[in-house]
Image (cartoon, rainbow, N blue to C red; front, side):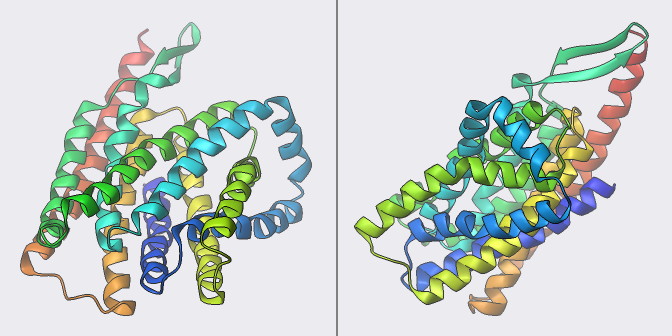
Length: 323
């Protein structure tokens, strides 16, 4: 239950991304700076945290062992996640992006066969390939159904081009984020804590963000003061607080694909928090009764997903004892 609660807290801080990115787009800011500034601003804060915890040297030692994997999977987990997310903000409102982003619930579950799970048997540890948690996947579909119901009225108001440019990048991001996160977890093998892992991935993805910044200077010029300040808030709330909380939650269930899928499902709460944020700060219209019905379906889907995932894990462990 604790990883689920931490995951929901992470979703709350992640929601600031959608609200602030929408705000920056409305004020004329470029998605290039919304993406790159977040990770550039994250570096000094994360460095201070890790140094204060006296964990910088172990992190650097770990990164030197496999620099190629760190750069590759950090680019996937952070670069191919956040750049498309910010790009989509130029074509779709924040609430629609937050809703579409919940496809990561299914994306994360579909990635299970790419990883191995360690189980303990009478003959010692045994590694087997992960399986897609189909029962949990069905519950995820319920969550997505609720999100679809909640957003269907708004989606009708968008053109096909805006819909595609707003959806396709998020589909890419939905696979990139859990893939990069899990691959780095495998590289670390539990030797690094959440703060070290977030800092390591941020440092390893810096070449991409610096190149993107140079592209931004060449194409749209330097960012405005307002966009820089809002990007700083995104870096603090979403980039540091939310990411560390989410990584802490995934660390708690590391090696358990069913529980990992349940933790990732908590991110569906982002759409609720993003909707509330846009209502408060961007003055969007109040949700209709149909949208409220969709919210209820999302909450129900989350409860069922968590229940089914935990039951599946219990049955799985009982069977593995007899291996």
